[in-house]
Every structure is written in C-alpha cells, then in structure tokens.
Image (cartoon, rainbow, N blue to C red; front, side, top):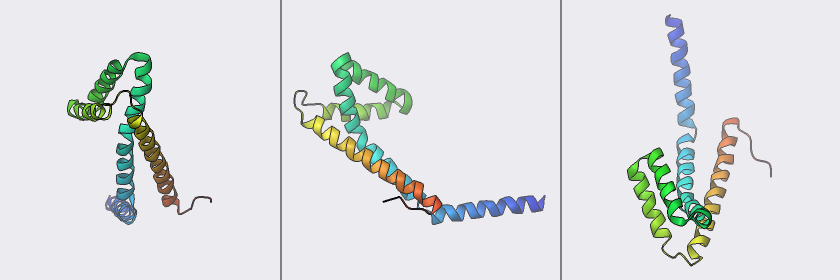
Length: 128
C-alpha cells in the first residue's frame, strides 16, 4: 500500500513540476484574450448576415437568449450592450469593416497561438 501511494505521489510531483515549467498558464490566457477579442467582430458579422434573412431584431434576440442560457443573464446583458453599441450606425459600413478586421485578427492570432502551443509539449518546431 505504501509503495502504491509513493508511486502516485511521485507522479503528482512530476506532473506539478512539468506544469510549472511549461507555459500553460500564459498560453491559456493568451488564447482566452484573443478569443474574447474576436467575439464582437464575429457578432457584428453574424447579425449583419443573419439579419438580412431573418431580421436584425430576431437575430439579436436569439443570440441574447442563447448566451443567457449558456453563460447567464448578466453575461447576456453585457454582450447585448456590446452589440447595441457596435450596431448604432445601421447603414454605414465602418463597423462591418471593423468587425471583419477584428475577427480576422482574432482568428489569425488564435490559430498562431494554437500552433505554438501544440509544438511545445513535443519539443518540435513548425515547418518553414
């Protein structure tokens, strides 16, 4: 029994040491940051495209309902505020262009970070 406990204790110590030596916390924080950064741009484009077919108010209501169901009403209200503030100019293309650029930037950086993270555990580098 003591030998088994000692074995698992050593595994736990090695795992903790490898976790602390890695950049897992930094990598997860950067992924979360870039994902959150690209959400408003994605929502602008989704509302713009789906609103063309289903009506803008119906799309906003459904997005709010789904976010409220998944993340809670407070989060849904916060994101609804982001949507309202970003869709003030309904006829202008400025916010749509900003949405596209922020979504492309966010997606590009997310994929870059995912590639970087997937290289680290195995000690290999990306092909040039």
